[in-house]
Length: 202
Image 1: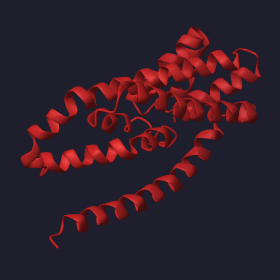
Image 2 (image 1 turned 90 degrees about the horizontal axis):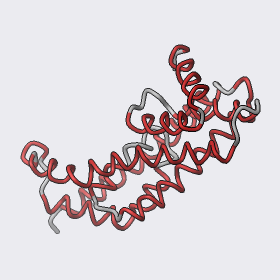
Image 3 (image 1 turned 180 degrees about the vertical axis):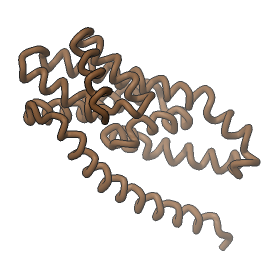
Image 4 (image 1 turned 60 degrees about the vertical axis):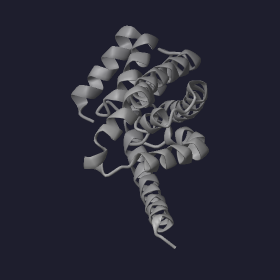
């Protein structure tokens, strides 16, 4: 992340306080160039300096994360399925296949949302299939709040621990995310092979 953007994030937090944290976390869910890996460690550093308090910071960050996730969930639930089916010919997606995907997400979606909220690069996107599969809103809110809360605690704590070196957290998370994404890619390939074999006539 560039120094100019980091300075802007710092100015927002310094000027607006907890409301600024909530605002930054909301747009972080919608505009990935502003990553939580920078916002939250900085708040951890400011907590260590006595400029912020931990509990209000966590509440603001989690509320902002949930608000952003709800925007994407809404897009998926009230626009996604119709949009996909309207381009089914181009995308080569049949309604029956989409129904099977919905059932799969209904069965395992809770774990996907909970864990996905703690995986960089996936945190925001997981809200769309949750809406697309019409996951109950209350369940989505609960799982998103839990997953986001745990992620926020981790990054705030790391920033508090590293102090003036809080910016190093982004690099550490980047290395972690590469490992996680590699594992997810392997799992995706396995699931794709299983799905393809299940469609073959016997």
